[in-house]
Image 1: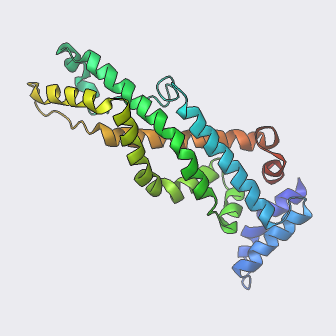
Image 2: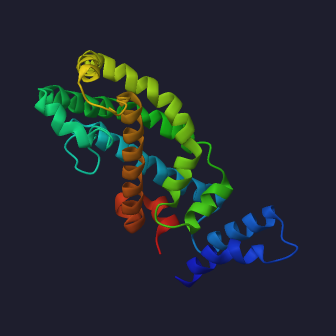
Image 3: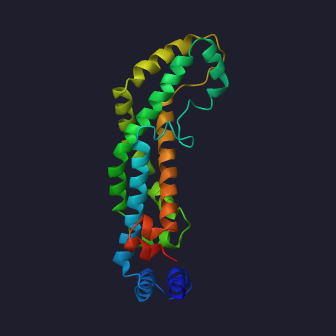
Length: 238
């Protein structure tokens, strides 16, 4: 316990030293970690990468299952909030069945796209540096997920949108959506909100994905050996 505390404090304490360079700071952390039984820098980075690969992989697997989005009250994708106030009116115009079908297809599209997320996640993990890994170890219980989102969200959006579009097309979403949109535009309702459901599905899909990655990271941090591996346990156990 005492040795690990020394390791966790090594870098911030080193920053207080006027003559300390970044390589010296990193080496100090590695030396303390090694003396504490936590291995060298390579092992530290490997432990962090393993944890991130596990948490992201489990999140993608969970959400890609049938009902991964639709059956989860936390992640279910519904019509945009801007549309909700007039949803009852749309149902009065006989669009209830179409609304339900569109919501079902939005969730199915997100579930199918989640399958493709694993490769994107793994590629991002491989670019992690020693400095990144040390920062994550000292960070809060979703530090890895926060780093991951910061580094990958822009790329994920670019790569995820075609996946969303392709899968929505395959399950017949656009035919159903165009029918709804055509009827919706003809309704005598003033100031109708925009129904850009494609971007809505993209945003909600990624938000849920990162939330689930964070959940999995927290579980690994709480029980790193049981939910991870020996090397992950060596890095995160306290």
